[in-house]
Length: 234
Image 1 (cartoon, helix red, strand yellow):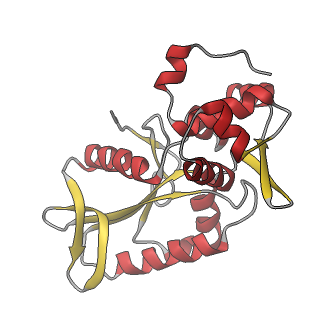
Image 2 (image 1 turned 45 degrees about the horizontal axis):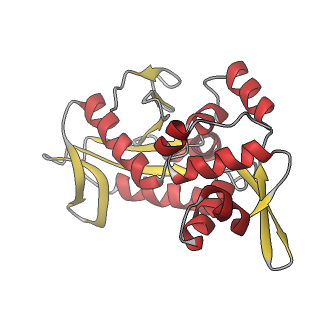
Image 3 (image 1 turned 90 degrees about the vertical axis):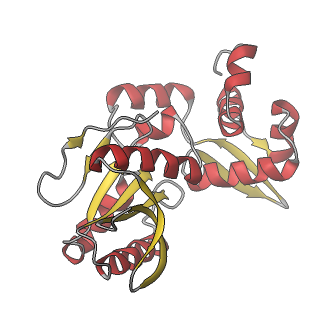
């Protein structure tokens, strides 16, 4: 079990981090949503249900259905998490260990990072000829992109539904008249990398980026792929 954290640290945590901290503290034991509510004080019960669902889909915790209820445990024990982070600080697991943020929080971070990268403000807007509101569009419509916060299925398997979403967005971006078209991904780097490995030849005019929670931006395709792009987020 992990050592207990201080009251000050607990107060500064998000509810998702509190759930993760509790489950890590009881590892290798598991807990139901009701037990998590009781030990973390997060209310209402529905909020804990949504948190454990999202953490499970992100691969941060395991969920097993037992009768009418689910039981949750950390995907890796505390020591394994620390070893993985120290051994491979830049791989797909490192951002997940550092923090678990919501898709809306990621979109905010992505906007800051891409504004810094392109040197211009970006905001949600429509593009002529495409009936979609894109997340990140420059005032002159020369730059257009979307932010995607995806994970592998249960942290391991390929996500075919999300691959279809990526393909749809590539197609929509290519229908715009923008000079720079991009997708910026968060959470699990493997998702865009696996898509590019299979369908990268279909996205030659769309730039793929990965943004980790530390604000480091990486270009994943095209010339310069694999290099970090300097980015500062707050």
